[in-house]
Length: 241
Image (tube, rainbow, N blue to C red):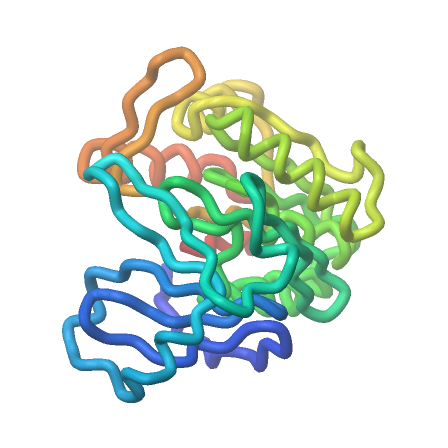
């Protein structure tokens, strides 16, 4: 396994406008968001720009918070359930600000999406396994690039969101195989079945819960998961972490 660093592609519908003071200011399509980022330890570059945020995340406890609309917020950023479509090339994803400050899209993963596209030409009918698939951005890129995709996530809500993203991107419900399962349990079961994949995607959280109460902790689960993934890799396979 050889680590690589990839340049970030241009995202026409996203911009990091500023960061600092434990927050970041971002534009997703027409909406400017202000939300926490504990790694932004420096001072903001343009403090006045932050007052123009359309939605601001207000933390209420260590378990989450709420979003408050600002003056001039567009209609899609208001109400009890704000959501809108974010675009990248042929990709269409629903942005939904959640009580955990996430919005369903991680633009920093775009370099991995481009890598998935580039790798597809290596095989005639490539199979891709996306563990911790979340709302399906990488899986959708893979579907559009000709992969047979197995998308795994332990959250039914995330899988439902992925189905909505399929529809938003003009793909049928059965364009990918959707599995609600603990990532490690599924990978081990696939090993027993003798399954093989040309590309495996891993973007694990530090902590998570499986659909049957399984507990995922990165420091405990990552090593056995890598072992299982290694057994799932076909000849000349690629693992993207």
